Amino acid sequence: MQEVTDAAFWELVQQRGGADVYWTEYCRVHAVSCLEKWIVASVRANPTGRPVVAQMIGNDIPHLVRTARQLEQLPVAAIDFNLGCPAPVVYKKCAGGGLLRDPQRVDAILGALRETVRIKFTVKTRLGFESAAAFATLLPIFARHSLDLLTVHARTVTQGYGLPVHYDLIRRAAEMMPCPVLANGHIYSADQALAVLARTKARGLMIGRGAIRNPWLFSQIRQRLRGEPVMYPTGRDVLAYIEALWATNDTNGVSEKLQAQWMKRFTNYIGEGLGAHAGRFLYAIRRAETRAEFFRVCREHLDHDDALKLEPSETGP
Figure 1 (tube, rainbow, N blue to C red):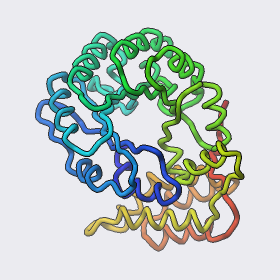
Figure 2: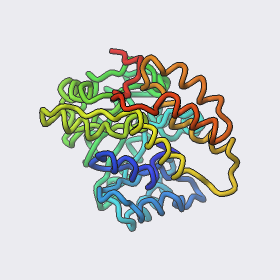
Figure 3: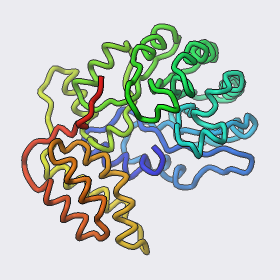
Figure 4: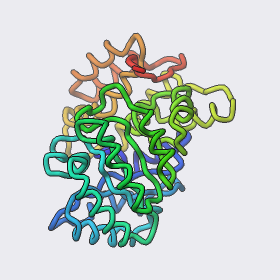
């Protein structure tokens, strides 16, 4: 997740149970691109003790090859090619999810990268650009390039993050692909995570926005897999998490108003998990312009010892 998954965020997640593997933000690849310094710094710092996968996005084969060779020099476990980003600023440049409109180009890029990359090579994809029916064309392309892992976000690009999520097509990929498949898209609780694994037969899960809302989610899924009671954070645990997010994202010289605005990329997701209080929290936090206002709202809703499931109110099918 751009502007989220840096080393500081990985560390906060790891302190609350942690993922098995972490993905970097994507490196933007074009004719004059260089590896982003902050991404390289996160890879080198990696405070988690877990493997890190370097992600890149672009459409120019020679420069993707060049970037892959540069990334291989870093302490990464794999190189991932992004075919899933739904941001218009990305897909309008025929990158990320925009490439899914051109399966022949996808085929050529994957062939060149598979020939180049000497460590593990992975791909994250959506089902298609406008129609999930495109996945039937894309799957054979993925299958013939000896991928080490395929992550399937079971929505189309134009769907964005809307419902429904087509988990049945992840199962089709898991049955057809010669490599492991990860299920991605709308994973929001331990029980629902196990249901997705059962439904898709995927080897594992990739969790994005759900981990912003609930960094304890990875630990909760492991508890559920072991048949143990799921441990939920208290309001004060969540408050401490938000305080840590503020501290790790605090930049010298940035006004409190800009800092509060920057924090809303986290609290917009966290707020969705506050049940009956979600609407009031989100209304107030989105209007906070100083540190004092911001944390007054947080304390009003989170300064308690009640357990919070941190599940979005709209869970869909």
